[in-house]
Length: 325
Image (cartoon, rainbow, N blue to C red; front, side):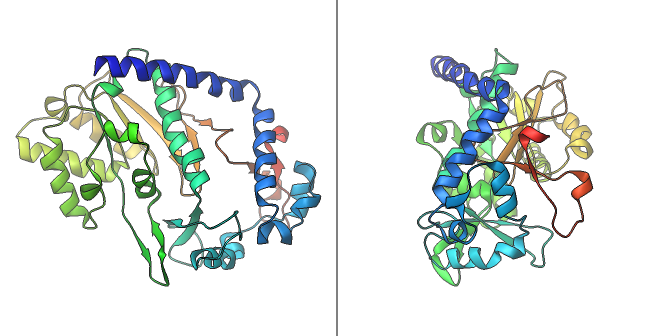
């Protein structure tokens, strides 16, 4: 395992050069992503509606493509969920992330193409490990197992070949083979629909594992910790997993949970790392563990526009690219 960890650490140092490249040339990175996405969308229903063929630059895009809310593109998304091709993205999209949001619906469905899944979400996971190793050259993440607290997915009732679920479940389902070697539990347990039963089963299995890292929302992670301590009779998690060194969190503010985690992991040198992995994309990672901000991932397949405060609330607000921020 030491040999494997050293090999992966070498690979992550190589990946760090790419991250440093877009940090040094952020506008170039975004320009390249913009061109790639524009080219991909030219023959879609959305691309034809807004004249992607005539868009030459980011300014043209801001003028020709108005800011959309979810309800504006909901009809496009439903067509995609019913199996239609070339709507918002080339070919057919089979995966949709179910996300709560401030829309008229209780849930919103976000298309997750294979390119987005691999080139953004899964790539963002590798970027997280890359940045962690850059912060901690003595890291031994791949000397043990990693736990992903994933959700579930199911068939879309109106069109069963379309699958909907949490983005974490989609990531686990399509995880690279090498990552599966260092992850636990297996898919059968990870996708159990009953969360309480899943937590109990995970606790039974994981108490015997050599865990090095955990990723998940704080609420369910705390429930898992509590269950494991009840099963083992230990006083804190480091007695169960002495090699645990990193907790990756996101989705909610970690501030209200920090003191609780210190009770479960009373280790002043333990590492916490925040990510912003939304249903729409893996947007940002904490790049300096000594600071509270996060690094925007600029070459992970997402083109960003920003809304100036003075534009907020206008009927036709004007967005600007990164280069104008």
